[in-house]
Length: 169
Image (cartoon, rainbow, N blue to C red; front, side):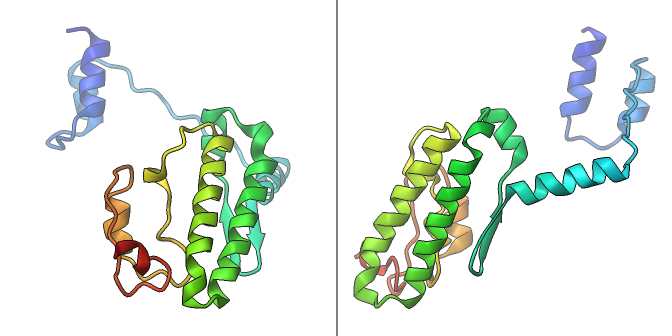
């Protein structure tokens, strides 16, 4: 086994009987030194500007766009589109807050369509199994149960949910 393979095994191991440093010493593997960049007023302002650029707010709703994901998906050019879609979703949230129970089905469909548009903008496959449909106002469906099922076709509905209860019947 090469040192590189041993290092990978150590780094990926969940065993904590020895520290990584001890194992590196034992197998004569050089530890990579982490370089920290000094924070300057200029770099601090740059980071604040970036955070402001990634922040989306409409009314009482807000979110931050993940810049690591923007890098990974190579969609920085679509940032404005992604932000606009989030604002559209927040506008639907406001409508859900004041809607009568019989009006909810249309808004559920609107949210699903916006989630599909967001997936396209991000460069992801369109898959309703990854939508965060249970994170809408007035929804009383089980949040943790549905988070656990993210990526699957299974959903947990509360029959009394004013937003989704009619979908479970």
